[in-house]
Length: 211
Image (cartoon, rainbow, N blue to C red; front, side):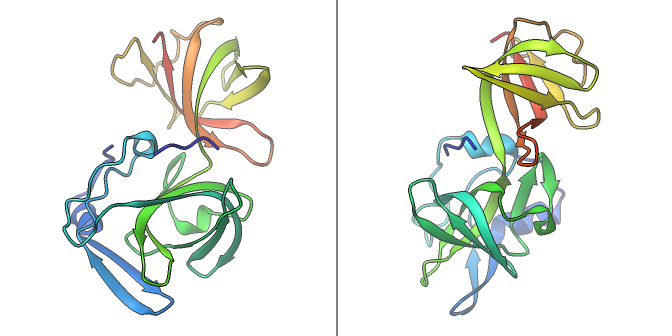
């Protein structure tokens, strides 16, 4: 899973509430952290530069990444890439991305994840946003079929799965479109999507070609 550290669609009051309140049942008791203002919640936000918090009560956002090893209720035990261990608390305000915006029920043990949130007094990360199995790779297109792109990334061959209702393309920095007909074999393509642990493929959210 690739992760380094912008804005997803909001739907009126729900989007406002997510920004304004992060509600968590931390181990030490119920806690409300106000006005997180930690950044966007779409897929691109996982790779955006960290932004300073707009809430004076929150010095900065905290980030965690790794593999989900255990799920206990709404708490994820995550083992990081460098041996660290995180406890990530999901809340009713947590945004969860796994190819599309989804729910906590879509998170499984063995999934890779990247989370942004606020560190609680007990060390738990109260998550504002979680991106599950997110990948962002520069590849070369080696083959094109109706529902798949055959890709190479370095020495690795990859299969990118196209989803008609989800997958979009952007050409030479143009707006996103569902028209993939301008993709060509041999093109360099940046793939933003969700890794599939079951077969090693990628569910494609967006192909950026010609950059």
